[in-house]
Image (cartoon, rainbow, N blue to C red; front, top):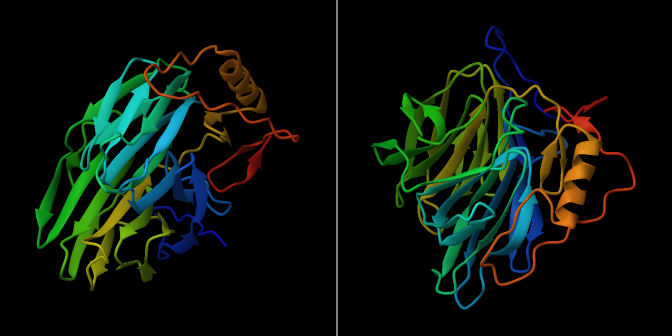
Length: 323
C-alpha cells in the first residue's frame, strides 16, 4: 500500500514505503530497473520517470544503443557515474556526457533524440535516466537542450553531495526547471561507513534511490533496485551506511519536489493530458511531422508502437484516474 502524504502542519510522523522496481529492456543491449512510475506511486514532485541502469560490464559490447525516438511534455535528466554516452537530437545537438556531468533536454511541444555508447567507450556503464513532467505553462513551448560540465555541491566527513537539479541546503544547480524540485547525489567514500543529515523542505515530497552499496534512511534498509518513498512533512533526512559498495562508494540519489497536481497521461515517450494528445503525437511521429530529424545516428528511428485498444486515462500522482 502506498504511503499517504502528510502536510507540513501535520503532527504525525511522515510515513515511508519501500517500493521495488522492475527490469525493463531498453534497446537491444541494455536492461534498466524502472523505479517510477509504479502503480502505488506515479510521481515524486514533478519527477515522473526513473530508470537506473548498471553497473554493467560493456567491455567489447555495444553498450547503450537507443535509436532516435520522440518526446513531448517533459524534460530528460541524464546522469552518469560510470561510462560515456553520446546524445544527438533534432535540434542538431551533439554532446557526450561523462560522469558528474548533466544533460538536460526539454521536449516542450516535441523533440527527438538518440543515446548511444561511442565505439571506443569505457568498460563499465552506470547511471540514471529521469523525466520531469512539464507543467501546463511550459509544456507547449519550444524544445531545448543544455549540457552542464559540472554541478555544485559540498563535501564533509567522507560524504560528497552533488546538487544535480534544484536547490539543497542553499546550493543551487544551474539546470533550468519549471517547477520547484530537487535531485541530488549523495556519495559515501569507499572503505568506511558514514552519516549525513540533509535539510528538507516540508512542503516537498521526497524519495531516495540507492545506486550502489547499502544505506539506511527513515528506518528502512536501502539496496539497489528499490525506491523509498518518504512522503511529505520532513524537515531533515539522515542517511547512514555501515559498509562500502561492492564495487566502490555507496551512492544514493535524492528526489523531491512540490506535489504535482496536474493529472497526466503517460504513454511510450509522451507526457500529455488526454488520450487525444497522445494519439496526435504518435501519428505525428509515424508521419515524420513535428519532431524533426536526428542526424548522424547509424540506424533507423524507433517505430511508434500500436495504441492500446482501451482509452488512455489521465492519472494523478497517486495513480488515481481523472475524467
